[in-house]
Image 1 (cartoon, helix red, strand yellow):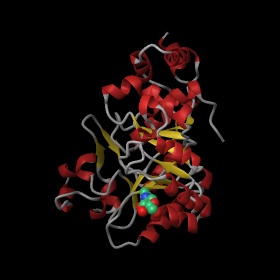
Image 2 (spheres, rainbow, N blue to C red):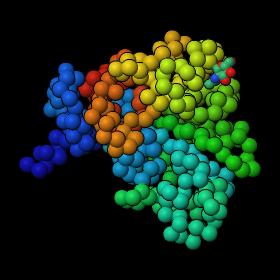
Image 3 (cartoon, rainbow, N blue to C red):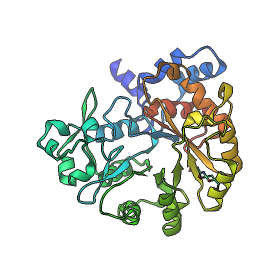
Amino acid sequence: MIILRLFCILGAAGVEWGERVPYLVGRMNPSPLKRDLETCLAEARPAAHEFSIGHRGACLEFPEHTKESYEAAISQGAGTVECDVAVTADGEFVCRHSRCDLDETTNILATPLAGKCDGTCCTTDITLEEFKSLSGTNDRSCGTLLSHRESIELIKSAGRSFAPELKKYRGPLDYDHLRRKLVDEYVAAGVDSSLVQLQSFDRNDVDFWIREYPQFGSRAVLLDSSKCDGSMAGCPQISNFSAWKASGINYYAPSYRSLLGHDNRPSDLAIAAKRAGLEIIAWTIESSRDDKESVVVFEILHALAQDVGVRSVFSDWPATSTFYANCQLAGFPS
Ligand SMILES: *[C@@H]1O[C@H](CO)[C@@H](O)[C@H](O)[C@H]1NC(C)=O
């Protein structure tokens, strides 16, 4: 019986939805969508899906940007797994959300390397070897830290796609060197550009990739950190979107909140970006144990997928968006 049940939860390639997905479906208010999702819980087979992006892995539970977090994202069916790319003192790339978060996301303060922290603990203060001697931590568990190269091997061996984000850097190296090195690590690992979406909040990074590496550049993602409400005040405007598109930018990634207006209808921002011909990627659902969001997370995904027409969604718990996609969208797009 137990063996049978295990077999039932594990679908294609070991993808599983786990316990949170039925919990979230159960919390929804009654609706046709809820009925469809309940049917899928009983009948659909879990499979990886490009709609689902693992944000820092599956960091709702696992220490972010660790082997364990990435493996969880993979088994939750994330079609793409994100490594945020920070630079070490010896110029190597490691997966960390920001350059100076080591005191919050690793055990550095409990190690002799704490002596290298000067107020803040930054990747640029330690070498790759020193970084690898630390553990990733959150308030629940520990995890194995990864270099960017190791993340490529892990994600590649699972057959998933890549979304490295070049983070802000402060140090002696020049940005063009870092921009080049990021692409070179994929080329050296034999990864085809069609599987990589380079990302940055910095327009200059994206412009560089478009100019120097057109195949990678045409898939690069311009991230938007503006906290606009979708009404266009303080947001990029339609003229910005058309200018980006004309300069070769094809992918635009704002917060999902700025894509949805009243009653979860597409915001003016979403409509303008679409009209300019940009592909939209939304960040980030499941980013906290936000009770209000968790009741409506499938309605949010439905509005993003069906009405806004986003290509994919970042999630701190990718099983949620994998399940939605398995249930409501066509299979793994090529
Ligand atoms: C949008 O375009 C205006 C006018 O060219 C420019 O001043 C502004 O910085 C642009 N905004 C963004 C977010 O690119």
